Amino acid sequence: MADHAREIENLICTYAERLDAGDLDGVAELFAHGRITGMQDAPPEAFFTGVAGVRRMYEMATRLYEDGTPKTHHHTSNIQIDVDETAGSARASAYYFVTQATVDLPLQVIVTGRYHDTFRRIDGKWWFDTRIMLVDQLGDTSHHLKF
Picture 1 (tube, helix red, strand yellow):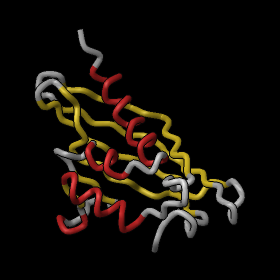
Picture 2 (picture 1 turned 135 degrees about the horizontal axis):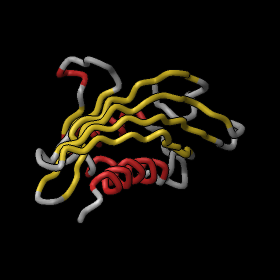
Picture 3 (picture 1 turned 90 degrees about the vertical axis):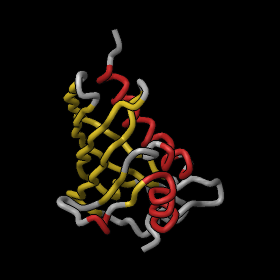
């Protein structure tokens, strides 16, 4: 019997691992059947959809360094997953915090927040359906974000 909750948890962790590696194409691929936004109750124009849309969002927002990474570590915790196996859908919530250290920025937490995610199973594989990234606390993101 498949452990759908574990598969979804691995998907959530894969997102963080790829982002920290600077693999923006790999992050975008996780949303081949989904979308992402940074706003609760976001209007349709605030979502970035599909591989191209999500890739565009991260390209516009994320500062990459000479080693090809954003020099961050995305830490995800308190993951709660509710799977509807019959419908092939799931919901999850989690906390996140991001640490960063660069030549000019000592190691520090730059942002904390929560993810509200939905997932769907397509041909036996779990995919992000929607990710809403909510910010709770904001530190110095000037070395991470382009804006």
